[in-house]
Length: 224
Image (cartoon, rainbow, N blue to C red):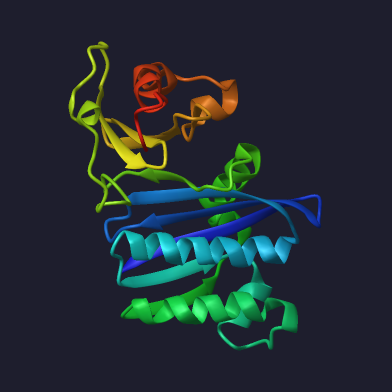
């Protein structure tokens, strides 16, 4: 059974939205986390979209049994049927209903905000990123797009004296860079990275690794 946490950020309300979700395996290890951005909406819409993002990410990773945790009492009660949802939320509930059969076991639970810190952090990263395409941190899975063949450059360790020794192409100009047990995801088009250092300083060691890859991918003859 996997554990999923989701949270949404809204600044102001209504305003820009940040979406965040993470997936934790049976051993308590975070195997993946996702951040994304939407230009406008309400705080409740941010929560619903984050939950949908969690479900879609879990499906991509092949997760079949999932417990979802969120700190919005309203959303949890609407999803479980305890509260009746208003008309404006029905499209989100319909989407969740379409995704639910992809799981053999799926449940939704409320947690206090202090127990949902990681998802809150990811939603704020999404708000800061201004990228509608999700940034995916992949720890236990090498790619969320297994059907896409990796480029040859991704199989070659870089010569830098660090443990940044596995780079893979995920498609749509996204690469994953493995460092020990952690993986950062970087958009070589915008040169934005999912790691904490980039969020703080707007630069990181991963961007240095990505530069030669960017030159290759951005050539007119190279299609991502």
